Image (cartoon, rainbow, N blue to C red):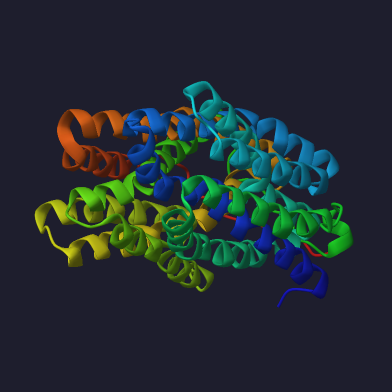
Length: 389
């Protein structure tokens, strides 16, 4: 069980994650068809904004992580929520491509300072001995973001229009997440919290590059599928409302995947390897057996495995490189994955126009299987615990 202080920190971070993921990340996939209908912009042009945000988020990750290592996350996350709310508000009034890209530049900065990575660094520094359990709870709540916000945003856009809908969501983000972020604790040392030190299994640059390559491909697939899932389901005969509802099941699937991870005992690298292979197989399923059942199965399995990945990623970083300078190490790995993450939505947008969504989905399946194979090259992490002080 976690201490009361750790529970309080976890609750504040969980609320912030729920609104930040829901508004800054998942809303885009639902908004894209509405913007396309009104503005006539192509999927590739619309995806350019989301890709820019991911690029800027990755570029800022090492600096944000280093700041949190030194000074804590309170100021970073409060500022990030405010910038994100402003970015969504600018998005809602965008009439031209430069204005649209400016909005997503602000959202990219907000992503770097509000989403999972700053939250993970917060609990690892403030409650190091309880960080793994805290991460599981934070991601369990975060998993609900897709389930709650994708259908909710679709309803807002359908009833009020996508512009007023975005404005409502920007206001909701600020009202919910600013107070929670402002109440976060300052970091304390492991010795003050009874935390456990974790010795790294590897400090070699080769391990950094291998893990970076795995995360780069895995994140590219995850971002591309999330961004284009609604459009893919519409390509397979679903209405925008039905597609948003089906893709919204991702949140419940992620919740299930993280619950399974909470009781898991296998090494993190082995679980990551198996789930990436399963993702590759699942993405091909609707192409081989086209049906609503196959589409729902794809969403559920992909969601469950992606949910597990969210927990596995920080665990692998800690087990491989230790807890010292977690924010910086994790930020550098985020930077390594930036190019693939930021270009994946745009790449799938172009691929869909060139070879169709089915061909693009085959390419994503191949990337998932490749990332699984690369994990054979990574030394198996083994945690070593120092005596509790």
